[in-house]
Length: 173
View 1: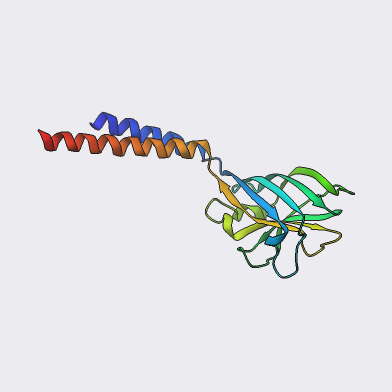
View 2: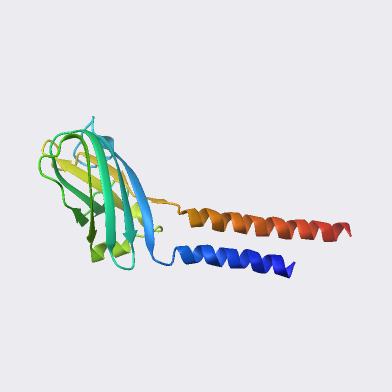
């Protein structure tokens, strides 16, 4: 019994080590209806993703969109759903990008260090266009579970199952 628990514990610790580098993956569905205050683009849609290292501020990001006029800005803002907030991470936008398209990049911004799996809902992606300068499409960040998180969960469930089984056998003896 002790050997099984040690193996389960070792597996869980190994999975936790995979997150030790501090990088987390986030995604968002971008819609005009998510804009707050001024109306967003009713036809605009998009998806955004970012890998953010909370230790270094490294941000690798990608935004794909459809049905937008000329894109003039894209950022991560501080703010929960239903509220507007200041820009904390500003993305470079290629000139003349409109219609359907995508753009991506990488940067280091110390302000990004506050974005973690636990605080993701406090931030949102926002894309601004010439037609909707206050914001065309918006989406709250959501943490994307890492494969290591699933392994950790499965190892924990296996350990609980093993302990429950062992306790049931002892009751029968």
